[in-house]
Image (cartoon, rainbow, N blue to C red; front, side, top):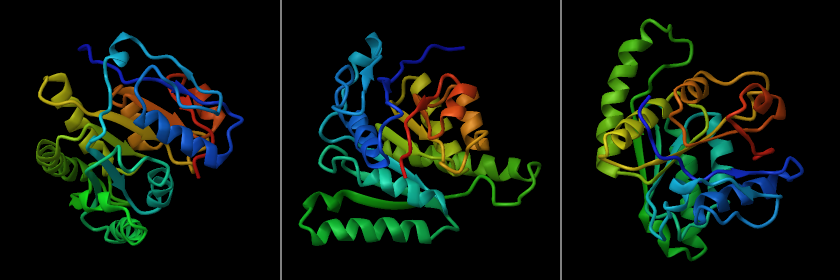
Amino acid sequence: MPWRPRAASFRYSSRCSPSASRTCFGAAASRRPGRPPPGCGVSSSSDLCAQSMIFSSSTDIVWVLSGGHTAEMMNIVTALQKDRFTPRYYVAALTDNMSLQKAQVYEQSLIQSGEKIIKNAHFMQIYRSREVGQSYITSIATTLLATLHAMWLVIRIRPQVIFCNGPGTCFPLCVCAFVLKVLGLGWSSIFYIESIARVKKLSLSGLLLYKLRIADQFYVQWPQLQQKYPRAYYAGRLM
């Protein structure tokens, strides 16, 4: 398997409350690797490559939204420092308008509160890899189409950070970002947070990202999942 740099790793104490977990998780993504965020019993386990990677004050970030996953993702969005992550790209499936509406409402609330950096928010749509209930055989063609669209999107945006939490929409984006990183044509740190609804096993998107080692950081919200998938980090409840 080809070598690839790894992002900084942070461990979170299971004693964290949901709000504290979100705060620490957001801090981990925005702080310099090797310097763990305060509180929550965080300890750094960064390697040499991680210490050389620093997220600047103008980090491009992509949020992948979809259906019921959107509420969980928006909880994490609110924990991040907005001035460190600009511009922000919200990506949802072509057939999912409600998720983008929620993101737009949130961004509009920042405008009303005087946040000028909100002008750097962008809302985009992508073909869905697999619709709910769609057979796995027919999803092959739709996944290929979504991958081509995702590649165009990743090349256009060149994101430094990608956050996703389970929707099928995220898999083509993550694969394209990973391929460009391996080829030396781009650099994207992929943070995957498994949905809190996944208690005993990973979602299909999560399982693929875990098995293929595509995600730089892989988080679960139930301790039994971390025991079953040891390379994952137990981040506590983020909801």
